[in-house]
Length: 193
Length: 193
DNA sequence: CCCGGCTCTTCGCAAATGACAAGAAATAAA
DNA sequence: TTTATTTCTTGTCATTTGCGAAGAGCCGGG
Image (cartoon, rainbow over all chains, first blue to last red):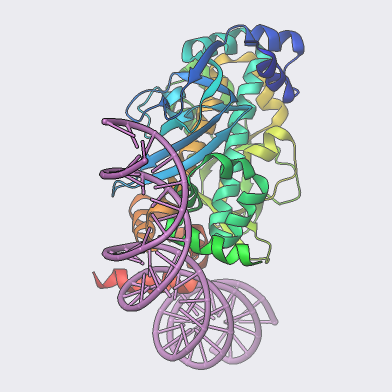
């Protein structure tokens, strides 16, 4: 168990030097999540800023009719946490569940704030994570408006093929904003081409 | 022209003391935007962290077919800027246009970074802005998936009635992810109730 | 190994929405 | 004011998508 991947990830933004990345990484604690295990359950306060090194996580919420709606997918080398619950210390409306066995590293809210205090570079890193999340969500929202379900399916298949290895089709369907029935039809059409 | 509203806004998050809020506000420069004027045009780097004191701004992007798609609406007492372009110094894909005469205050990227450096509290404030943007976009994306167009229209009417005072219906339609034709029909149905 | 449950596909039908076009209403320009 | 332009509504029709149900396929627990 080494911090290698985490250090690489911290440096990948070009906001953190190697020395600082090592310093930051040393604060993180190893964490494993078994298949179907939860990183976070709704109704609780998110207290782990989790770097997913290996595995796959799906986040989802329940709508007013009780339907399970996928809010996001996370594969390796990403930070996984619910920003609003984490930073505002409020109850999470989302669940984060491992689709396969996962391993990674986390720091708590307190540890993160200590690092923000002491290491200028880590604040910039933290901000870049938020900005990235916001940008990708903007792109997704725009695609919900401007693209057809089939176009969204095709784009997801090309840009995030790993999702199709790890996630159930019904969960991909709700992520795309359609029913599993409709996704099935789209896949049938698409496979003809 | 006073910083009063800006100071109040800075304090509203409870992350910034009055003294610090005043200190921060003093760095901001007054800015007016005439009706139909632009705060930001696509293809340029967003360099203004703009506090909108009065007025109304619509942000929009063009899809691949050249259709104008509303990405957001901003009324008074909000921070208006494109986070990805601003923080990453990349070209904006969005336009920000004043729907009516606007007035407010801005700081540049450089000024914001200086404040982040010198004032711990302002960093927390800046983060809370990003977290809020992310949370509201999450809510919107989820509503695009789980709610019907009529439900989204009804919710917007209740929670953001000012949008209907300032924005054209066709712009509200693209924000809701439907055509203006469809919005017109929904309004007709809705008015019967 | 077999059973039960979950997932995915398929079908028929209903409802929602989009595309296109025409006309009315509102707004801006001359 | 008059004219031109834009916005909004309405109509028809085609397409997409959802809903409910049924059946096939897959997987895990006993």
